[in-house]
Length: 574
Ligand SMILES: [Fe+2]
Image (tube, rainbow, N blue to C red):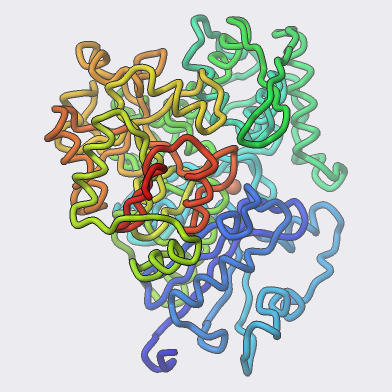
């Protein structure tokens, strides 16, 4: 361990709670620098980490930063958990000491004193997570999610490092809960909002929901109870809002959802898939259009009020790539920064940044990448391969070999460097394929047990964006949808969605050298500076974290080759 005197400030940001918790994560900030960030699900292999403390993520962060519990200046949660308990039950039953003893179990950590613990408002943590990493001095800030304590949205403005809240949106009008209710209406889980977005791309006709009234101030929803009177009366605001939407959907979109069943070899069990018809697709399209109209309206109101066209977004709605794409292509914003972990996992980052600024005066540069998770050196990878008796080759130019295999139509598991945080695979834990082969879309979706109607995304060398897209905006975190140039759509059929758009990731040598070199080699071999990129996981598991998990996913699926650091593994290697 480094001596404490070498560190001016050590802050541990957290998300994840035992009740109503999800997306548990931890983030370590030392002297104003993000040293580590990871989601708990990557370690426990339980997706979204419902109702969990981020114990494994904390252990990882402290180890990565070589930090002891005694050295931590503050532990901060990106939720005001005592406030949520008081809203619902009137009392918060835990002392800080009790919570800290859970977070740092005495059988794992030795310490003299426990650090101070603070809870900050959820939307402030979201706002800080985007503004403080945007690189903007001045910004309009939009936070939109299901719910953060007593609001479902927050409009804010920041200048010279100070964030000021301008307006809050009541829980009844929650866009996050609207999306979740829509998912349930067509047979998806509430966590399947991304799937709903994919289905919307197959829609032909859309109508904005007629109960939503856009006003000069914000917006309202006809017939929905104003929750500010109801907080404290209802134990479950989410269920109350969902039931209001359920009634509306049943009246306006009364359709049945049927399923077909098949045996999934990967899971070794029977799985079901929903039979979607055009009615369902048009419904998804309507949900998407409604969301876009409301978010764009809010962005316009906010920008009019602040006079600042630098916009930052966080909260789960920030992951809606089509909306983000429109904000840029329609010129509503001048500059857009969407926090790559816009979901609740990202509030551990935001909470830590907020305290680093407030208590220690730190300012932060624009976030270049989010490769902040565990890394494995070549010797560690080799030890795992030897232990598991896996045949392998160590290669000098892994980029060339992987690119050649992709050009030949092989599917490659690509495991390099530090694991990425956030919901998108960004080229360190990715399954890659050749976007020029039309059938590749179907093959990769089958490998991953994904529905065939779901799109797959491209990673493109950033200098070629304008050649392939009707937009030149950088998108290093894969958070914007843009139209593909029609004359180029035929070149990359496997990554063009039904509506002629794609959610691209722009890759630079600066942001990810290994991934850049791989795509560059693919370009030299094929003339296309693009590869298909989907997350390295199978059967709906969290993204792989360790070499062992990557090997397991590789042998449990039809992935052809695996690049683990500089080691190359194929299924016919002897
Ligand atoms: Fe949130």
